[in-house]
Amino acid sequence: MALAGIKVIEFAGLAPGPFAGLVLADNGASVVRIDRLGSQTLDVLCRGKRSLSVDIKVPSGRELVKRLFVDADVLIDPFRPGVLERLGLGPDVFLGSGGLNKRLIYARIVGFPRQGSFRDMAGHDVNYLALSGILPLLPGTDEKPAFPLNLLADFAGGGLFCALGIILALFERSRTNLGQVVDADMVSGVRYVSSFPLLNSLLPNKNFSGPRGTNLLDGGAPFYNLYLCQGGGWISVGCLEPHFFETFLEYFLAALPPENMASWKPTPAGQFDRTDWPRLKRFMELGFLSNTRDYWTRIFQNTDACVVPVLSPVEAAKLDSPSSTSMLQSMKVSKKPAMLAAGQHTEQVLDEAGVSWEYRKQLVADGAIDAPKRAPKL
Image (cartoon, rainbow, N blue to C red; front, side, top):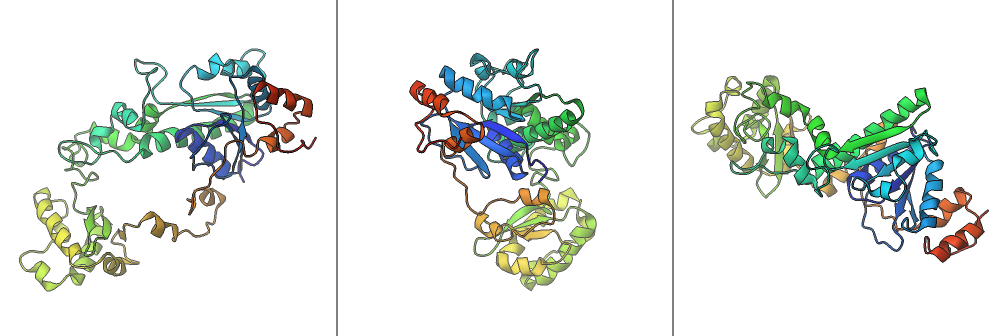
């Protein structure tokens, strides 16, 4: 795989850090997660990783992880600014003049930009969305925008953006033989992945600059929306282009009971007549309610109408199939979460690092690691 042979050390964290490590692990990197000694974790983003438990507040524990960083390619720091510096594990220790590992990619994920009035504050996904400018453009009610779980900041603008930065830094290292600091902040990451709607909102473009819920992609357009079906299932409609909308109408009108078209029926020519959108939306709502999700799925199967069912997580997992490329294979979502116990691979990782039995006994005595369950393989 593309990242085979790349050694990654990931400090345990929440959401964006583990996701960045998951992307690297799924593409062949060897990822070791450093957990706090005695910690419990519910992290489900641990597929393909191993865990080492160590107390980095103990001097000998810090020296142990420093030793691991000297032999690593990538370090993922999920902490707030200054945490690793205060522990003597900041970037300058490795990348500065006389640094211990000048090839190290030192990747950091924070919420707010490092320069600015919010840089030292705690925050979460919804706070980063709030500062990015995209939140007012997201769907919701007339009174209040909605936010898409924690997908935009934690994962798209945080973990995935950081993983991209790491891969680009590894590519640059192949030319320069030098590592670098990769700084990812989630406010900037969200703005980057939201470039399309943000830029369009600044233009006199009626498809993107109207009040929330009246635009092309925020639920305003009847032909880009979700519809409830008979029995409770949902169907998604995304026929934006005129030829797709025309195909949609062809199949939709043919499948409706006659009473649904007693007084009015839409035509392809009226797709972008906004004065007709309320009537078209109501027509489609009543139409989809006339039958079940499975019925409409069969009607639109293998057509260019851009209509597919809204699947549950369990249903979607059944659609997984082998991919033709290693990149897409790595993007598959597991059917069940992987669980990784803190410290599960401590002895294995120390074996590979060549840590002596005497050194380990000292680490145990210092309270830096747990006592080994077996004699080391040295």
